[in-house]
Image (tube, rainbow, N blue to C red; front, side):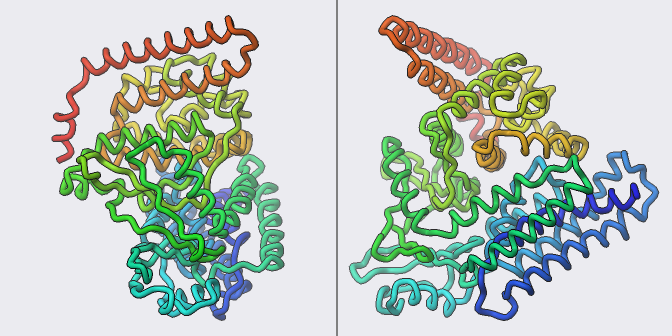
Amino acid sequence: MYASRKILKYALYGSVAVGTIISLRGNQNKIEDVGFIRFGRAAFAAANIALHYKRTLYSTSLDPSSIEYNYFSSVHKDAAEKLLELCCANKGVFIKVGQHIGALDYLLPQEYIETMRVLHSQAPSSSLNDIFFVIKEELKQDPLELFTEFSPEPVGTASLAQVHKAKLKDGSVVAVKVQHPSVKGNAMELYNLSSAVKVLVMIASKIFPEFKIKWLVDESKKNIPRELDFTEEAANTKKAKDMFKHFHWLKVPDVYDDLSTKRVLTMEFVEGGQVNDVKYMINNGINPFEVSDKLGLLYAEMIFHKGYVHSDPHPGNILVNKLHNGEASIILLDHGLYAYLSDNVRKEYSGLWLSILNKDMVGMKKHSAALGVGSLYGLFACMVSGRSWNAIESGITITKHSVKEKEEFQLNIPTFLAKISETLALVNKEMLLILKTNDLLRGIEFSLKTHNRMSSFIIMSKSCIQCVYECKMKQCKSVISRYKTAVEENWNLFKVMIYYFYLCIKTVSVKSAFKNIT
């Protein structure tokens, strides 16, 4: 019985993702993409992964509680490859959830994370004929009549759509984002498959009551339909363009409303290199540290000030180029999914970050409880910061984030898997997309080798202080209380600046640091 439970538990690394994926699929025109065939593929993949673990990991004599047993790397890798094959075969929303799995650093073994992350940049593409069919169906006109030029090969392929470069009759160069034909949904089939997922989740919960996964299914069911509607993405794009227009170095492409529908989105075409492409930056005279600082400023503004957060910042959605004045510019793409944070969540999250930065255990516990976590505040602080508890206790502003710490952090994930799952089930649901966003941004920082920069802490600290006092100011009922609050805010900001100046004296110059990555 124990062995069976353990076999199924490892199978859940694959089958939980499978269950989430099959909850959201579209109605297809091709026989290989019909619902029951895709469902069959998913069921077969889940069974195959379970059998794979039984034949390999469970045929050994390793101690089930040992690190070697939990980290039998080749077994996890093979199982992850099977899951990747399923995503590529079923396409559409299967790819989208596969990408989400690639960001679940806290829930799955690293072999799954590394394998599924290829879907961020290597998603399967649709044929040009299929793309033209969708355009004609949506815009009611032949694509060759709408565009004087249309690149036969996509300039980018994502889970739900692909992008082609085209030219309008007036000479404007545009990016045409077209939904894959296999994604078009059918409400009744969606309902039936959602019901099937509920059964799978119920069974999994009975077998492993400590492994809480319903939140993952619920979030996928809520968010993926939002990303399927390009009219919502168009609205998000316009809102973001207006909301963050004070960042002169931020470029959000214009939308062509007359050439956009639920399945086709036509935008201004903007050139640039991916935000994690250090070689591109060096060749074009762009300072990675400047890019990292600006990205930090942008997301601090989103999270702590506006409560409106672009929640899919993987490298393919953030480009960089150089302005005429030599300054680095950030181009933000794919506005299909945004997180909305209430004032209370912004305040508590800001308080939590300040507590982490100040090594304030009482504050961590208080703000974690306000966000729904309670006694798991230590683990939650590690998940939010991406740092080990030892680093948090020592002070993350003075303890460098090393590769060794990152590896140890990943190594200990299986030990805390049940608690991590419980934390994600308990936390305020507004925080789930923020945790995903944090992970993706940290990945970019590691690629740019800017993760130990002191400037990121100053940006974070200032934004958190401003958010906390903004919320306090709203509660002030007299001129005196508002004046007192303003003085407290400015004093705390001044202390942060003094501390930053002290840290700068202890660290190397930007010029020297830049040479290290060249």
